[in-house]
Image (cartoon, rainbow, N blue to C red):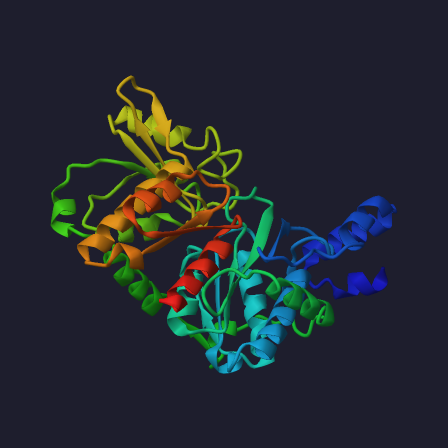
Length: 386
């Protein structure tokens, strides 16, 4: 036990282990220390506390040392191409991101860094834009407040799929002993570049290509309420919607600013029952008929529409997907893309709406295993096939 305590440089987690040792709580020590947290296709996600089975500074360092070693071994020119690192506003995300950067720097990597809190999509976008070897986003998405996570994106901008996860996990086992805990002055290292401004400018420039008629948007009288669920989304959503030519949203003031404790919701997932109650109440008070929301790391979207009888219809993911698919088809046709050259995919647990649309309209359709990693990799394969 002395060896484990000696590794804990974080005073909070060190004190937790020392307290359990002093009290003789072997059951809790077994739970925290016996079985290391497993690296999978979603990376890492766990409660933040001491122990090998949890997410903490030690397990983040180990994961980063293993990931950097595996990337160097398997991705051509990985050191020069570098890694993209970002983080959200959760407790410890700031230091976890910097410990990740430290491990990659120690391995000889360039680091493309988002030093301030930001949305998850900025990392995979930057990986593709910068042709980086891989990317890491520190976030637990819409998990409870005591959790955090370590999302990994490969050189194609997609989350990893087998057998990459197995190779990375094996490398983590080989590199569990921490090399460095020093994050002082990370941002000033000559190999670290703050990519926030150029990458976000490029991101919103790409997003503007999704708009067919800015003038039509500018003429709308649409009113809508928006909530980022105490997450990072508000400034990015505001910029995005403004670039589309849409009027500004009415924000839920109690939920607009980032707050890692998520004080007004029991579970910060906009798709959960009751999560949009404050947004709906605000919309009712101001006679507004549309509510939209992001989850805390702004990679999930939800929407609700007020009905004629005063009730609210919460759109399902399948319904939103069908709406988005119809718009993509409309855009492709306006750009004179042949239907046969258009491909759309969804996961196998989704409704059959997209499959039916493809059969009727003539575009290519495929379903994949559940998860964006499978859909993203399938789309890449289809693009490579032309």
